[in-house]
Image 1 (tube, rainbow, N blue to C red):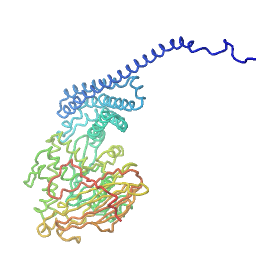
Image 2 (cartoon, one colour; image 1 turned 30 degrees about the horizontal axis):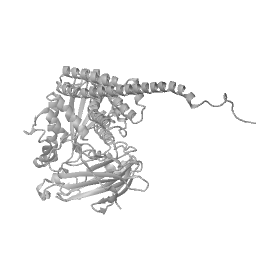
Image 3 (cartoon, rainbow, N blue to C red; image 1 turned 90 degrees about the vertical axis):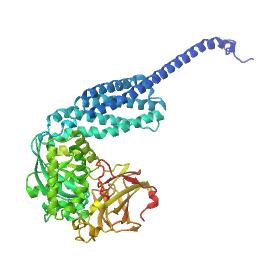
Image 4 (spheres, rainbow, N blue to C red; image 1 turned 135 degrees about the vertical axis):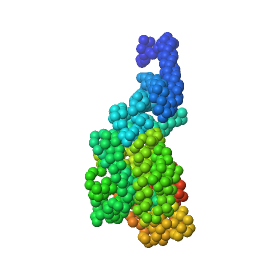
Length: 620
């Protein structure tokens, strides 16, 4: 019996498939063609719009520069015209990169991150043009630095008050745009796009201080200048010829009264005439006393041994109130370097002594020549008081270039030579985010923040001849991957070889505190990162004993260095960065003296040079 399939049940022969295959092939080809067309259209759409967006962003750059130039020159009409051009180009770039097709392309591997980055750059530029530049240009006449100078002893606060809502909103919009650009990772971007993102972040970084200066000024100045009632402000002159951690010995204190923009000089006193007291005048942390001694809360001249400026300022305010009564609303500190910058705004000022003080001679005159000319401290104090009163009088009368005045204050703050503290919590909150606050360095999980501060122990004015340089580095040296930080501070005594006999006794100290005339004794204070550990110190190549402690979770080492004329020594301090896993590093310093009797640029920050091969230089 035969077993098998019938003809009807058997599979069809190959020839029977041909009609089906022929019918399917055109359909498949059509699908491929359609997809190819769509893909070409998609790529073309994205490519053309990317090219146009790039052109618009490039066209926006000259407009942005024109806005800045027009504002600086005071040409409001030109600023508005340039701002309009900037907004037009930025808006078109944002529109070209914000459609659904572009967003769809951002999901494509490799290509997508680049499209997203271009969109963020365009959007951030558009936001800045619409929400920052245009509003600030609209109120530029109200916050123009030329209009902020005193007239007849009074600053008109009304324009600042009126502009404050607009400026505050623009400041917030700027930081939002900067934050969006900073959030773009450049790791997977092609070079042109990555360069564009880096360039934009760089521009944000450059503009940020100016934006914050304008925004914070409108938030701070009206209140601090007495818009809502009288304010008492202490202006403290620091003398870097005798160093303290915040800049210098407190040589004099002036009480300024501000009432609805009217500013008057109420009183002046030499620092030596205030106090001392038998016990601390305010709450000084035990850790601070442990590191700097009990005098920090009893002597005005020692209140700024600590680099924690808010603590030093509250102590200074408490000392003034204890000596004179009343209430201190703010404390401002500055030094003769800041004064030299202010004199660029006022021009030369004639003094009762017959001298003319200028930006060129202010530092040598106030830090050196006065001591050679007047041997008695009372004569020196009288000279300083008369100079301060003459300069204040010229400022209050409005004989000043407003733009140069603002530039001087801005540069002084960025170089740590100007500090401001307010007794009013809302104002202090604003100050805390600025370079003016002077708080202890703040570390992050990625970056260890260190500090290097100098306190004179000679008891004289020899720091006019002290030169200091700082270098630092960090590297992962340990098996637990905690980074090691290393700081080197090199001090040099540039006084003449015969300084002990050729310089006045008031300058050398005359050996009163045990330091031979002509020599300089300095206490080098080095702060490690919060939560870190002090691993070791040395002076030159030898281990050295130190005063150590902890200040607000920061390890502190204090090393005493004594130098003969012409001598140089180096202090090395090592820390373990217990809270960091990467070797990021920042270093804050006392504004360091030039050591050669020259006037440093008020805006120049202390240069921190880099130490390589930290692991090869460990303190054993």
